[in-house]
Image (cartoon, rainbow over all chains, first blue to last red; front, side):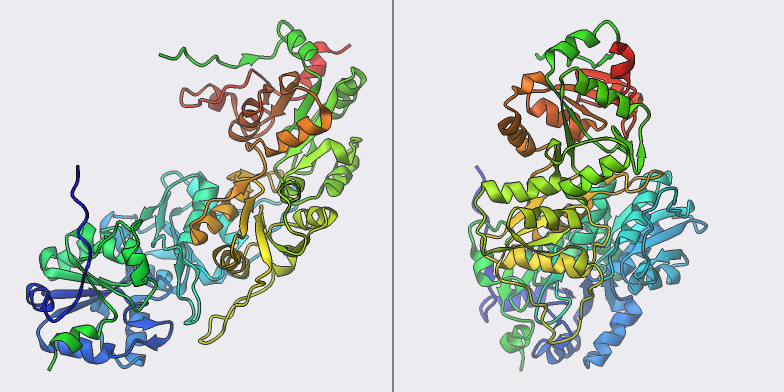
Length: 304
Length: 304
């Protein structure tokens, strides 16, 4: 018999010191942790500055693939937070890096169902992308003898959240995966929903990825959270043991699981999609080490 | 230990008589069996006439939900085949009948991701449909403080193949399923692909249904093949024991499985998506009773 899973501890003045002292790098999810839609969450800016002043490394890990790292750095700046490009690990970047570390041939092309961010990261990594926003207004012709042509040199299809999903893109990606020998099927992530606006959740990459699974009867390689692919990258870059990292996120099944899979400490913040009720529901079997209401509690509990 | 599964027999002059004499009703899938895209398969018309002349009941069972039964009858006529509306069982009709037999309240509305056929069948059955082709050109606004509103009186979302799938429809259906208490999630079918044109296969209802599963994290009620919901209807209508029916189809995992689930005899035709190689591959575990190249073999082997 297994012993019961240890329940998450509420972060407090009693337990925060041992967490803080043992952690060299804080990994932050963005949506629901740093911001909500286009609004910064209260106290985030001061808390990040204070963490830096205490010598902590900061890393921002996001499953949202709509933006590239360059675009994310701009978003941080526009919200008054100074973040360097190489502190950001987005799933758009992860998709490009997956191809790079797996020696994807330069002469092959990549078809994108998703946003501009994926195409930008592919280009920076030296790959040729097709599709994306450009195919958002394309329509199909369902007439006798009209053949839908696709590029036979496409060797990978990358699927992320796509607010301009259409039948043209589904057919393009499906033909590549089904008919181009060895074509890879890569998902930035499989999140069911995301905060595309501040007031509501919208279908996430999990919806577009599932649509492609439905038509191809194939399962994708997932590069975003909770897959540990991005963590392998982080390890290589920072040379910090994962036991000295703390993953801070608002989602149990992506952020917290991602941190746990990699051996990090984990801190759930309740400023995003997860409520305390969900966390403490008997059906929930993902328990972070700690939980708190928002990122600024770190400063509130420990700061000057 | 189970004995090995009996392999399908090639239909021949030796075995056809026992099949023919024991069957009172032939159930035909349409796409890949009667036609391919908009082209009738050779010899179908003569064979159907001859079967009728021998006193056999004919039923046409299609997972394609784009058309209503009225529209299907017109398609048959345009191809020179005389078929009555009530010989046709489409998944668009099945969706409407599912709501009817389950006493779906008349005052509730039905949101449709799919074609005109579903809306027509809903209307004939006395229900109010929303969405469908009308929402095909609608776009979403992803701006701060813009709220995507949905009708709180929607009590069911019906999802079928939709060549005009977009993010608006995915969000509309997702909000209904996630936020309207007790809202049903009905799939016409889950076919991965379908012959939307004669030259190619295109993403089928399975793709749109999966997209909705991906965003709602819910599983649908399936009313088309291989679910036996339509068969229950057939039974009630024709009062013929299923052991005296023969399901004729081109797909192992929908048509043949549907026939077997219901206790019918099964005949696979190779005029559609399944090849003899697929049928005889050791990994295939759906074995029809018989297989043959096309429907007209019935007439060739038994006819005058």
